[in-house]
Amino acid sequence: MAMKMDLKGIIEQMETGEQDAALTALQSYNREMNHCFTFSKEDEQYREEEKLRKLLGELVLGFLNRELQPSCQLACLETVRILTRDKDCLDPFLSRSAMSTLARYAGIAVFSTATPAHNQPGEGQVEGEGGEGDEAAEASSEGMEEASPSSENADQEVIAEALKSICNILLHNQTGQVIAADLQLIKGVAERLKQCHDPIWNHEVRFFDLRLTFLLTALRVDVRAQLAQELHGISLLGNQLDATLDLSWPDTLETARAGLEDVPPEQLPPLSRQQIELAMEILKILFNITFDTTKRKVDEEEAAGYRHLGAILRHCLLSHADGDERTEEFHSHAVHLLGNLPLPCLDVLLMPKVQQGSIEYMGVNMDAVNMLLEYMEKRLDGGHKLKETLLPSLNLLTESARIHRETRKFLRSKVLPPLRDVKNKPEVGNSLRNKLVRIMTHIDTDVKDCAAEFLFVLCKESVSRFIKYTGYGNAAGLLAARGLLRGGRDSGIYSEDEDSETEEYREAKAHINPITGAVQEEQPDPMEGMTEEQKEIEAMKLVQMFDRLSRTNLIQPMQLGMDGKMREIAPEDLHKLTHNPLFPPEPHQEPVNSDSEDEA
Image 1: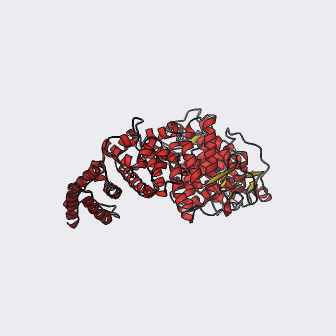
Image 2: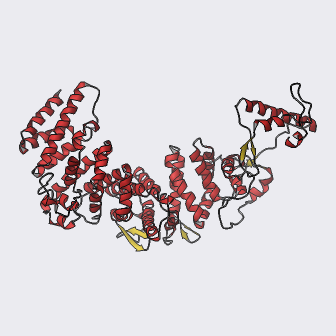
Image 3: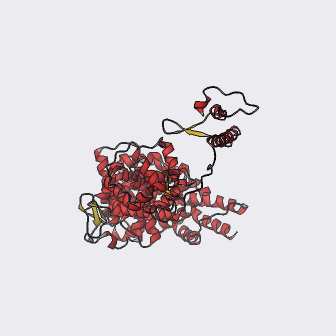
């Protein structure tokens, strides 16, 4: 009840139209509600307060369309930010004029003519502190330079509050998303993003510029395409990431930390919290606008842009934040984005020269590939939501190994070293091979298929080698899907490798059970002492049991076709197998056909 009385009192003060009274009332409301993010919606009191909050929103918008002193501008926008947290109280802000007002205060309004913003009609006009809003509307960085230094901080507070309010609206309401796209807010934000090297913008403005861009590209497919193509988003955001990480370029497609070019990656100081926050927002936006890149061909100019971005992402992989959890999150975004790059552009991961402390293999710098492998194993050990956490890195390693010989050979040396342990099954143990073979029988089809594909590529898509490392039982799923159950090699083109058989493997090879992939102790023969006729009788009993289970739809018998793929055995074919002419038919059976022997 106290809150309802407060709202009524605040509304009464706002209705007087006096700035000082409104300022005092709003500042009091903002202090009390600043940390309120949830709203009870089950009682009558909430419904009454909802009406009052909507009325307050309308009154605040009315004030924002007047000439206001800076402190009153800020208080009004703080109130809008608080009100827009409640998705049921957004009605006052879901109009073109309301969104335009907020966009002007955020400095991202796009005007239809070249008329400077300060000559626009009074609606939404921001005096004094509105200089930055005018600048962003028509892409004039000079306007920003003319703003007085003394008002700079106040301006940026206003801009940040307006950006937060727009973000809240987009997050909660589809109508707001449509209006934001129609108002071309992405163009206004893009203009300010071009000023990434200008130190005048504080962290909060830069962060919420990026957060707004992320929401627009995540929620609107048309905005996503507009940023990627019309506004050259890959280059724009690549430059933003470059500036955020403070990079220098000692060589083409080779990065370093500015001022620390001679420091090995593992000795670089951690990135600051602000750098990590900005970089992760940029990576998320880039993921949105490159989502379909691998599904289409890119021209040379685009490929050059993606290689440049790939070099920055390599730097991200080798950088770390202040804290393991933050570092993992940062690397996760980088890995997801790397998976969107065109496959031929992944060669940038191998381009840097081998330096002291680098991991070198076949004369190539494998620092980034090794980092990806370690990252993948950590996700594998975590065992939580493997589809979301493991697959991006596993897919990336698979495709890199498929197209880059050095990467495949390096990964094979780490994952599938020469086989020495032949006593244990491939899925038993703590090596990376053991862990991957274990998830080849995972309940999630995508997870088990991805693990099998990775190991299959490391085996150069050779069926015999794949079975050697995983066992036929674990390998059967992938082989059946590819029609390779009869053996052979898939269509991939790979170089020849040296013989990887160890002395231990050669000695035990004859005793290895190909189904389990491990040496199996000799078992007593259950058919020892049986005549051939008794063996066939037992076999036919088994066939008849299959037939009965098939007829009751408990199982679906399969057989291996000539194409190497499994196919269903039709009921009539299975029925024929149960009528072998070598045995007298049961009383209810009719004589078998002369060709049944061949079928059996």
